[in-house]
Length: 349
Image 1 (tube, rainbow, N blue to C red):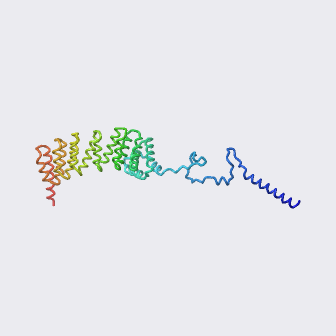
Image 2 (cartoon, rainbow, N blue to C red):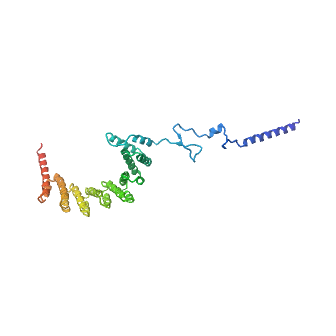
Image 3 (cartoon, one colour):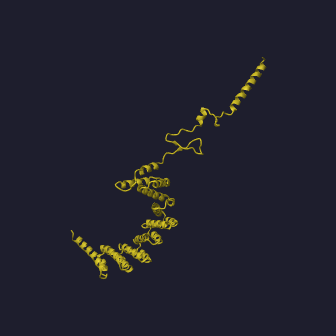
């Protein structure tokens, strides 16, 4: 064979090999019975998901990742603590009551604000399954904590609870927390509750919360409520607190109360409060603005007791103006006791 023929034959064989190898590389991979490509061990290893830790627990596949099951997160720390806290605890009181209450308070204080809604819902489910005194108190503490961080959400969630005493108590708890932050906002929300009786109860709770810090706001709100013993008690306490700093204004406001019984009650507490700073003015209020009777007698005796401690002469002169009768006799007896006490103290070495 001549050299040109050899070269030509070699070229043909080389071209044939190139075509053969290229065809094998481009040929579609074989498929198994369910239509998936058969992969080599190397390809499978490259495409395999990373190894999970032993604590991870696979759960049901989702549409988002059908080929790789998600990993179930470990239980929340609060869940474990909650389970441990309520295990075997049904009562709050008794010999271990103080320790149980401390555990309860510490647990609530350790819950992050973002977790409070979830924990409250969990506690509600537990209470519905097996109501206990301990669980009820724990739920109230959790609700108050939630209301202090997000009063509107907490209060609205409570309105979804079954209509019973637990819901009423929970509403009052949340409303009190809300009133401490935003009295007007809490009152506006409570006024919009569809149940009139429930709305009144919540408003009473809001006013009660504000009595000592904001007596005028509490008094204004209480005056709008329907007549009830709870309302009258709120008005009386709020006016008494107001009288500690502005007795004349409080007395003038009390004088405008249309209900005679309530007016007498409020005037009496204003007079007794006023006696601490100006007993003469308090005495005048009790005598001039109150009707004769047990209420006035009680106010007068309270004024005499305070006045006699600081100004025996002034108190005696006032009592001597009383007409003869039981009131004067009782007031005089009180002053006589003070006089004897002063005399014994003066004689002691």
